Image (cartoon, rainbow, N blue to C red; front, side):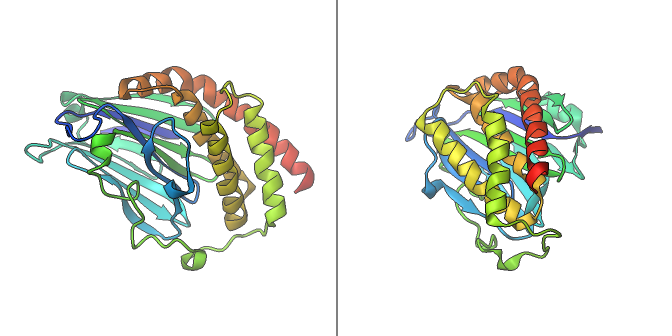
Length: 299
């Protein structure tokens, strides 16, 4: 049995038997981060719009992605994702090939040899802020990335699939689950500290500015929309939780956007993350430390 303390989990897979009606090699992406904020399927490296954004304010277990190849579930509590499970299947026989889960922020596989036998491989990277596990299943074209953050501990999830498989997937990456309330009335937890909207704006701006000062990403409409979306979600999260530390969650999304910009294949996504996550996480950590000091002066 394999156990890893996790900060980020990246799962990459490629699948065959793709639909001929769609563009099989066009990557689609989905993200779930923060409280969580959901960015539903859209073509990778295209601008994020309001049509692809929704929130989930309910405690429970939800399907994130479900199709003949993979079943990805997440558990939310106090509006944060606190557990995740990914199961791979043979699409022809529907037989379970391998299962990898993350509970109490430990990643484990009960049958690691079966994972390896069916081509599921992984690499591990860690910093003080998070750990990153990249899990790859290179049999056709999908990438799943789950980032587990510390202080407060929670998961961010990043998914890439071919358009043909995104089209036949169900789950939160496709549309809002009826169980997933989109208002705050269902929250079970109340913040221990009150942070005003104006204070939250200053907090989130401090974190984002510190990251952008270290970012190597070229400015574009895709990047600007991503930054604006993170700012909006960050402010909501800080007000909702009363925890300024939640502001760093969105930096992970910006880092992943930066690392995967211009990449057109699942193999490329994996390579970009594996080669850039350590240095990128170090930049994110520096930005977080700078932002913390700035926030401490006015909060």
